[in-house]
Image 1 (spheres, rainbow, N blue to C red):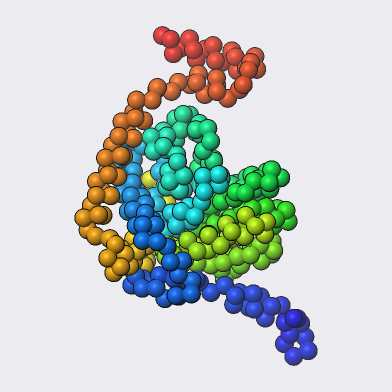
Image 2: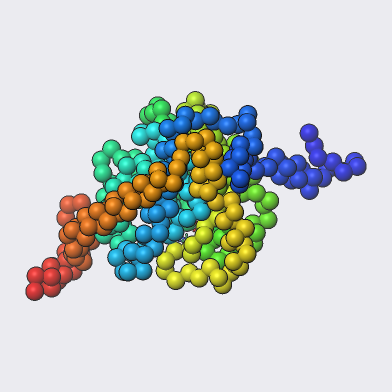
Length: 371
Ligand SMILES: Cc1ncc(C[n+]2csc(CCOP(=O)(O)OP(=O)(O)O)c2C)c(N)n1
């Protein structure tokens, strides 16, 4: 169908037609009520409880990580509160053989895929042992370069396809990440080669202080998949059921050989961009924060599960206590890691002999360190 105004082709109308296809999917609303019975995944009670447990655990981990960072006991940290549904309901769909290519805010998905918490803490401290991924664990360390993981995901996905692996690759970027060249290149390649990949855009509204509305003229970020011929959907990223269903369906399509999917999850980060000095009060008001807090993923899921009689205050307390205990243990373990030296970086950078100039530098460092 050609979009027309009178007897003239109308590109404005063509765009409006495309944009009208991206209404936000919601299954569980802010009041904890199912608003789309057809889409309800009808997860068994124990799975609903597991998903809630993971979200509560992650909220506590976020609070503790912020404190630990302020005490100087963690290094880099990007807060996650507000994004639990987007992160954990998408990861929940995955199988062990699926591969995660995360951004720096996506530590929770890695933990529930099997990354030990003490290693995540070492990674945060910039300790090289934190980037040594245990054998058989299909993850990359969190990516700092915005959008780069989209390209890597297309490559890993192509590898999976060529090997005939019945598994998928999932990758995450933010709203700001969709303005990067890497975003388009990765998505386009994955579409062209029909790789088994799931591309998630966690639209938490801000790229540091830059609001999503000044980032792009596109009405939705999900529609960016259209140009690459990649099926796309916009979901309420604070609704764990909507995120779960979109990711489950995307995984099924990918496994069946039908290629990648792009999912925009509409959410919010309550905290600062990272703990390195960002002050959100300089670019948003507390009224905006309160508006988003009304949509909180944990609050609405708690209401839903309590209504079903499968979640209680006591249960939640237990999860909180376990989280605190495990975090304490993981920090202790991270503290016990060998103190890293400048010479370690040089030794692990090259396999085999070092180039002569680096060998000279290494000798100097080793000399200094032995004094
Ligand atoms: C290629 C590149 N350019 C710039 C930066 C600096 N930078 C770090 S975070 C960030 C904003 C990212 O925002 P968004 O993609 O929305 O992700 P969010 O942090 O909100 O999850 C920028 C520009 C970077 N890390 N990499």
